[in-house]
Every structure is written in structure tokens, then in C-alpha cells.
Image (cartoon, rainbow, N blue to C red; front, side, top):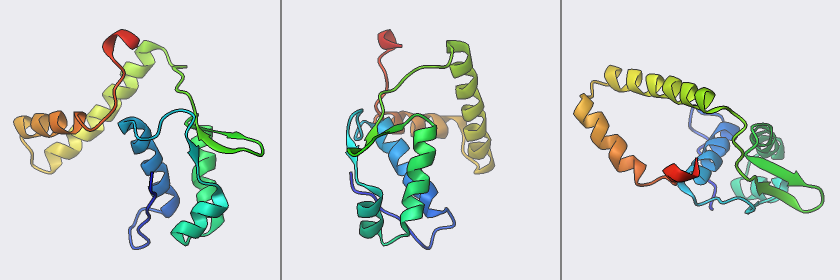
Length: 132
């Protein structure tokens, strides 16, 4: 995966990196066990401060999306469902509420939102119903 950053964006660079990793995992382009570039290598490639990359990696590790193997590097972690099904549904409902509130404020109809969601679903890697 090729990382990018937009220094002119209002979104901090470390947040941009976090979202790229999350999106890569969700879309299946970053699979468990994949090694990410080292902090030093990625900071050089992006021409950013190494602390920026380290901050992104640290936050992702705290969230359980990455794990560090001493002397080997930073890797995409195996997913683990440490939340109950009810807690997962509650978090999904809250995220959907935020998303739909934004869609209403942007003036989209329910049909437009549904069509957009259907189109985007095809771009993401979902767990099959019998796996959850």
C-alpha cells in the first residue's frame, strides 16, 4: 500500500495516516500479518517528522489494529472481537446516526444515500454472515 499525505489539509497528517490504514484494512488491501514501513522509512518517503508517523502507529496499536514485534517491525494485527454483539451493534448504530445526520444536512434523499452506500459497500471487505 502506498501512503500519501496532504500537508495542506485541515486534517493532521497523523490522522490522515490512521485513516489510510483503517481504510486499507476495511477494504482488504492490508491483511493481518502485512508488515508496514518502519517509522523512519515512511517519514522519509512522506517527508514528515518521524514523530508524526510514530504517533499514528502508536494510536493504531492502542486500538488493536497494529502490533509491533521487537526488532522485526510493525504489522497489521489479527482482528479480534473483544466486544459483545450488542456493544458492536450499538457502536454501528451510533456511527450510522452520525453518517445519516451528515447526509440529511447535505441535502441527500434516502434513495440517494441508499444508492451511495450500496456502491461503497462493493469497495470494502466484509466478514461473511456465517463468520461473525
